[in-house]
Image (cartoon, rainbow, N blue to C red; front, top):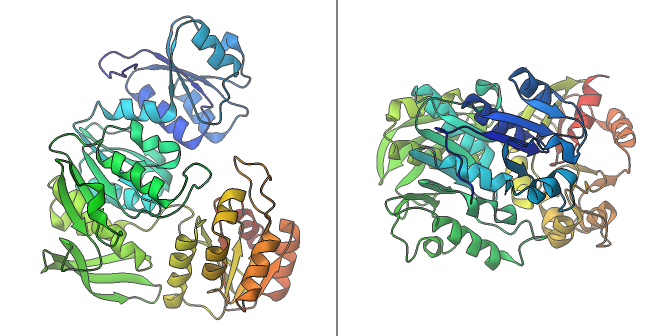
Length: 460
């Protein structure tokens, strides 16, 4: 296995360098003195920024792009085995590595590597921790899966020995990482195009825990069923958080909401009141995200006063209950929720947010997820006053499962929900302009490009 060593920078080539994660890793290596090149299908703001930093980028993919001095070629899961650059690297005997492997290799260059994992909440909790570390002047290196305004994007290269990142379970990516602190927020059924079932997913999270070195730390939610399963037979330190103070070292008491649904609470540490936490993001789910962030931050000896200040500074990341604006008196929110539990958490936020009626414009993400969780999606979406469905966003899949948004519409209507389905964004926009009224709350929701509907309405 090729090992990235910050003390010995080499030439690294990225196939698909324009992706948000790949560009972030390229940025880290550039900052550490590596020669970086890459290729992508199209020019973008991300590739142009890398070019300004000295990266050479090709907008075609050919074997000639692999220079003789290249020491490592990095690729994403979307790159096929017959890709000309990948094939050329292998033919030349150049080391190759997936994006996840590179991230793990980068991680080994830091004394403290915090990995935030879970089916939901990774981006938000990583962002909360980011704000805490910034408030404490810890100068961390950060890789987050969303746009965080305080770092001007999704990546920050710091000068300290702290590395903070999300750890995604899909395709077992996080099993290539080298953490010193693991955070597990929740473990639910998802990515069933890769995992066989929930038991298979739980096994992967257990293996993720086993990646911790002796003396490493696991921060885990006691609301996870049989949470002890994940650390049995390991030597790691275990720190717990959750809704039940009787079994959680970190919990919350006296939770209250402001007029926009943001929570305040008394922090309990081992049952003892330890200060007041005020959040600037809505939803009770963010109370538990913040408890995870607090536990991890205290473990690395960040003072509690700076932790509380950092959490209050955190106003959210892009596409996480993000207020986009208003049209005709209708407030537009955009959210990345694409799993039934995430939909429920997002719609629960609206109970404490100003509105007359809630419109949820949902774009299902992948055929496999929609088919596997169809009834759960219907149940979750039925909490909205009106549901508007777009076509399924295929992402990495093709339609071979015989599922469509019309099936989801039928399930919602069987539950008594009000649901409409349109095959084009233009039809959705016309319908909403006609039917939304002053005081309504409109949430565009999904991991695809449904946010474009809200942006179009705001231009009306």
